[in-house]
Amino acid sequence: MDSPLNTPSISGASAVARGVSRLFLRNQIVVQPEVSLRNNRRADLMGISNKGEIIIVEIKCSRADLLGDQKWPEYLEYCDRFFWAVPAGFDIGPLQSVAFMPERAGLIIADAYDAEIARPAGLWPIAPARRKTETQRLARLAMRRLMGIADPDSALSELEFE
Image (tube, helix red, strand yellow):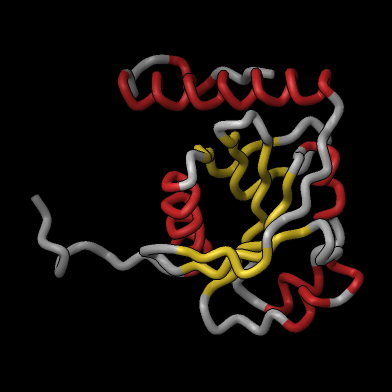
């Protein structure tokens, strides 16, 4: 087993994703990283709560990336709750502005070890048909990824699923 001293540190978006994943798991929300949506966007984290709510998290580690992101509203039609996740020390000022919909978009502050919800996300339920489709897509993605871990030599990694 590698010593913690020999293990490379996790930083940036990977660290934030890890912290958010740990926070969510404690709150009975399971997530998958890098989930393609049907509108050709990709959610940094997408998950399902124990109540069946679909949650998307968009991770930002730089102000330029945050301010330059014009596509994030396209995620909203695929989730009941949307969160921004940023590292500790990030300037959250822009996320308080109307342009970033603070009444809808929650805010999580995270590091590689944990995270905290600084602002809860509003609940905006998606249509039942969309919920069913996205829940099934997310479940199939998670199962495909687990199968790829269990049998890395299989052709699963080459298959695309809807």
